[in-house]
Picture 1 (cartoon, rainbow, N blue to C red):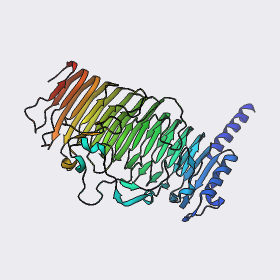
Picture 2: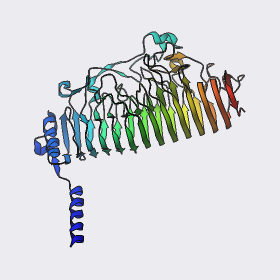
Picture 3: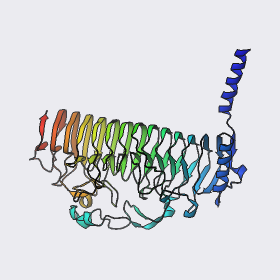
Picture 4: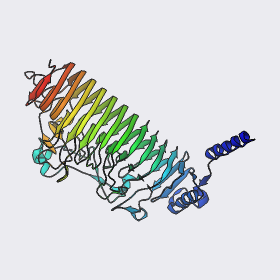
Length: 501
């Protein structure tokens, strides 16, 4: 009898999990005509589900206009096929957290919470933009650029944008200080600012998402995972104007919602099987970080038609270490307009971005089976305040190709953002690989080449400045065809160099 009772209890628990109670938002008065505001009705469904111990809040087919919604612990918001949650353009309908308005979802201090399904979340980003005006680069920075004020000049039209923004809500879907978060299978389109912010969270699963943002809109990052740990991201396709995937360690971020000034390392994050397009960086690690970042793995990723491929950045006290990239294909090009980056397939940089704080370090970064085809150098730069250490390239192919924007953009490095005069965007000769102020840089089994470049500022296969420990083995490389008198490798103030061909 005890065995029968035990199996009966197990069946009841298993059945309860499979047949979770559903709360259809239409039963709470939500009208799916895309016109009537449904925030209150959807929130009532969420609150009732939570009060009853959790379950599924069901969004059936239809278009539901909404402001900020707050998910709760134990709730799965399920978007059925044909369901669209549509952002209202009335900014008074969004909750303000910290100093800025949150977007369509603001969820904090929750556990076991999810958004799933085959429906869609629509940010109406274009409604928050001036559609006839593009942001351009103007200021002191132009003095250091090869083309001065003709940099990224567009003869007519808006070029690659970005559009000038109006007032807008900020991060569109926010999970702050949450545990056991699942985001699965749905589509998000047209965010006016960051699409997802996952901040101070632990144990997060992101899979099968489609993020399809307007390439003309600034700041509309795809997936920002910030000061969070134990995260798996897989099988996503992301297109956006700003960075597609960001792993960072911010404790705070310019008054944006969700940040709680928690000082805690971010670690153990895997990103795999993703396709990325961006007018800034396909993948960005770091920025203005107070928290250290470590133990990240990226694999089986395609980055195409982007301004910068992989961008690892330190500008504050947070450091980046133990990051692996494997089976990565990168294609970059130069863009017009005020986007960060200038066609670099890989960029690794550490220099001052804030006053007073000690600047973190970047170390133990590994690239294997990486193919890069871009319109600027693979750029590795550290200021004298810090160092790049232990960076490995194995089984690689790097090609620097001619750009159709050569005359208006070529011959410059872009290390923005930083506060070092003359090191934001600045004129430079361009090798395929440039390294400055680093220790232990390894190249093994690869090729470095050129495609169609003719300008005199294209130079070496590898240029190294102030590098201690440069190891080169089993690679083929040549100087630029526009400078056949140069050597393939240039060394300045370097030590412990071996394996030159």
